[in-house]
Length: 164
Figure (cartoon, one colour):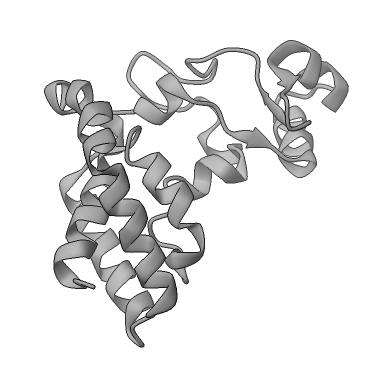
């Protein structure tokens, strides 16, 4: 996995134009069984990829924290939401709450998340490869291929299952 992770940004960069075009075509010509194929492919990919051997998302990027996320996690720590924000978050250029630093403070050396049960919505849904109407998030999916081996493999499998 480590070798693949090192190569992933370059592989993703090499495929970026091709993948971007693929999602543009997919948006224009949506197969009727697209959601079924996406879910089936997602399941296949996650039979191959174990997030606990990777955790690259937690090591290199941070999620957006919604107000609900902040309230839920602060409650978990028995602290005020404002104190949670002060301790762990900052406001980014888009005026969103994000982590002050990466890797994520809540990621353990064993790649387990110490707040897994109350983690942010963005973490629960990442890498968004089981989403219905995936053509709506093509740009995000292509971006995620540089970070997440599962997202990269998902797009490659989709292109072979659904050539456009």
